[in-house]
Image 1 (cartoon, helix red, strand yellow):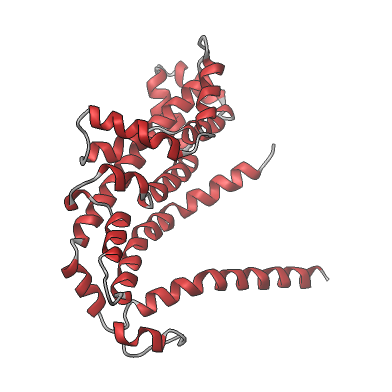
Image 2: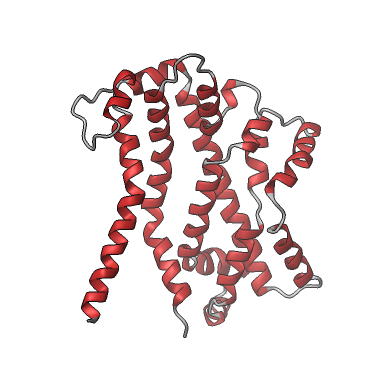
Length: 274
């Protein structure tokens, strides 16, 4: 009976996986189909007349390589900065005792409850006063700090064994060496989890890049894709749109595959109670 329940559980998981992967498979398949044959072939699972015409056309019609570079640069720098600042702040909140520590951490938690849309207008005026509109600084700086990252890293360091740090002090390590050489490497699963969430969120960000960028050279992929879609007048180029969508998903899938092992380990560690 137990074996049947396990088999049934796996069967349900397979059905859920298929239902989630099928639209993605259709998107990839139709991105290699010519525009005039997309709707006639949309119901087919496999299509033999595949072509790279859509991918060639999209690089000619819009500066897709520039959009891709901008998104990759902004997402990478933001991810690294978010991880570094969140790890140091989380370690400080977990290990150091200073006046107003709990109140300051409470304020950081409250910022997590504020919708991002509320901060857009103040941030825009701030970027304008600093003459950062339509620059990489405006795209990167607001994403370097976040309450979720500080909270996540603090929770990990609260359960970090103090014996390791005490042993490091005996060996002559100062607080910075203990953090960078001992605490941070052991926190790699949590760090990779935070990096994964930050990269995906920044990569998919649309509203903020749309507001602070004016020139085509500074647009990111989501903004460029939306403007490309809005440029259609009589005929929608679905093949080129699908090709752009496939290109947009490649870095996200790559980052997930790289950090998958650490992400799963972090979830398993969080579920184990001593």
